[in-house]
Length: 212
Image (cartoon, rainbow, N blue to C red; front, side):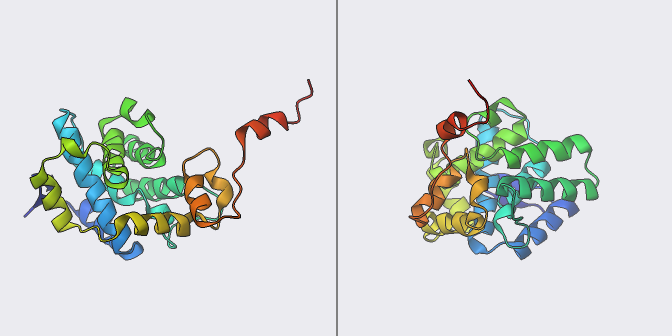
């Protein structure tokens, strides 16, 4: 029997069960419940926009989007978004989804911290971005009813979430600070580490090896 949360039907498939198991094992409660909420918020908002979303793909996108922050899946020299995207791509191919489907979810995860771009791509990419912006930044909460918000949070609580997700971001990126260049992620490192110095884009241009 399919699970239903706030009217969203979670696909009752072997792939979805395997995805849930993988993320539950790799992530702590903060990241797991956050990732499930991302899927649910994204599904609700995509439906309200009339988007035709493949919920199985959106589920993997939502659940895997922060896997690159976990010790099990983090690399030393790549953006955490790419780490999660690579795990999702491999997972989907191993579970019989097409290369196009796997690429679609790869983009959803790789671009989930990139403003504006996701809304111009597939419904699944947009759904993941919508879910992330809702859960982390609180954007567009007025698009959700009080009942929807209450039901999702009852299923997946967010105790002290603002502080815990910031700490999860920092813990997942502190060992690879150079990967935050050009992203909003460097704000997190600067918040927790006063000695952190951002790479300045203007300095990079001015100090490039080109002679004038």
